[in-house]
Amino acid sequence: MSKKVIILLATGFEEIEAVTVVDVLRRAGIEIISAGIDSMSITGSHGIAVAADKKLKDIKPDADAVIIPGGMPGAMHLHNSSEVNKFIKEMNSRGALIAGICAAPSVVMAPIGILDNKSATCYPGNQIDFSKSTKYKDEAVVVDGNIITSQGPATAMEFAFAIVEKLIGKDTVKKLKKHALVD
Image 1: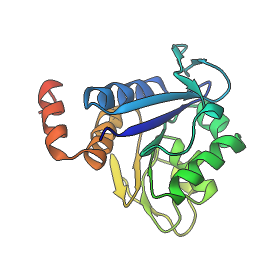
Image 2: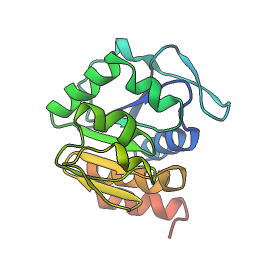
Image 3: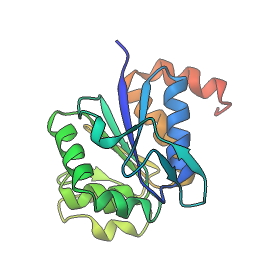
């Protein structure tokens, strides 16, 4: 059965973190739906406009995973959305995979308790916003149960591979890395 993933997009998202993940997951055969928070056309932090597949309000929190890209002010827009916070909490309560990169772990996930009692990473320096119960790891990607966190644009591909591995398995990741000339 095919896996379904939602990626949250708000104005000011980090393009590399979002587009890389969408591309890698689609190459893996995973259905990934980009969800616009405010509109169907979202401009990233470096002026690249992306067309969302749907608006978040039209999506049920029944997917296998939700991905939260970083970028500023994108991560703050996600943080400030009660709809986004409710969506992520519902996904987490079902045990779905919650994956955040760069500013997303500290700005979006930590404030709503998603990282409590977990090991996690984020953009270096942002871990000051983690709760006392979150164990910061200075690593490119950290996987702890249903939570995957990553540091930033340069770790986006490794982040995407970790998501694919968690959803489908190592064999698919091996094939993807070979085709992408990673090794």
